[in-house]
Image 1 (cartoon, rainbow, N blue to C red):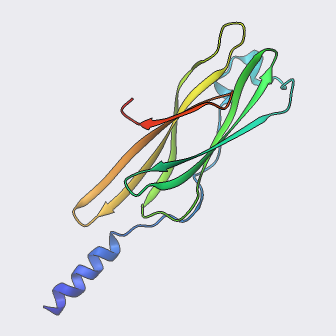
Image 2 (image 1 turned 180 degrees about the horizontal axis):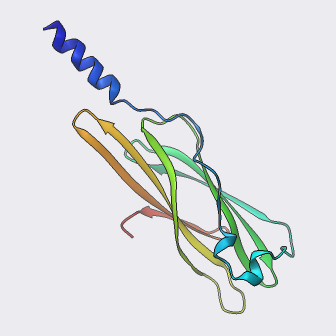
Amino acid sequence: MRVWIVASVVVVGACSGRTEAGPLGRPLELRQYLPDSLRSAVGSGTDSTFQQEIPVGPDSARVDLVWKAFQHGSGRYLSSVSGRLAAPAPYDSVILGNISGLKNAGTKSDPIESAKVQVAWFKRGPFGHKAGLMNFEFDAAGRRTIGPAGR
């Protein structure tokens, strides 16, 4: 009987992952997706920085997303996005995923670049693993949308 109790404690302990607060990898550079003429452009004004905290996963881990934008002429463009886990979370990993959905959310004469980034989480349990994705759509004007990855 003691063997089963010890084995149960070991299995539950091995499956209880934890990710400490801190950066979710390196910032993702977005200038690489711009045309050559804009890649090296120096913004006409100061860079803008925007921040949004989102809940991720069934345990609602708090993730702070920060994105930077610059203005060139009448257009606003994205330069980078980064993520940070605001507090320790009961997941084996939380990462900032792929960039997708790059488009102009403005007009042809006043472009506003927008993009989507996925925040992924992974958690091992005694009966398998669970994983999920959260989409975060943002633009160079500071607007944002949060939604499940099925969009």
